[in-house]
Amino acid sequence: MRILHTMLRVGDLSKSIEFYTTVLGMTLLRQKEYPDGQFTLAFLGYGDEAENTVIELTYNWGVEAYEQGNAYGHIALEVDDVYQATDEIKRQGGQILRDAGPMNAGKTIIAFVEDPDGYAIELVGKK
Image (cartoon, rainbow, N blue to C red):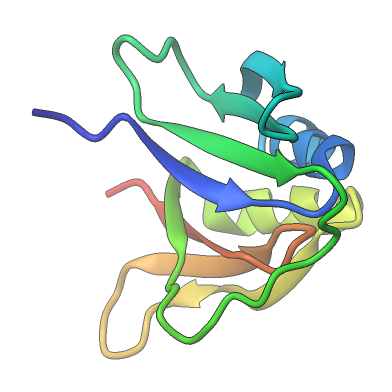
């Protein structure tokens, strides 16, 4: 078994694809509309789905926002340099939730950013 993808519901698919590709450097791997179900799926990631876990963005036509509830935590991405990554995300207009620095009660360098729908994404420095 392996994890295939994590699905996030989004209110503006174009804006979300722009964020994940331009700001976080993912590639749009595939996108398909489902008119009978009135939704569109877009899969993004850092490599082919056959070998990598990816993000599935689901846009339900006509739904502009969702309540995230209090169970969602975050998605974590490994980066070479958390300080450099957060600087680049800021430069591109991305929202930083927590600046780069050591994690609470630890030494691992982390930061948190927010996607256009308010989902938290943790940046974790390579060990």
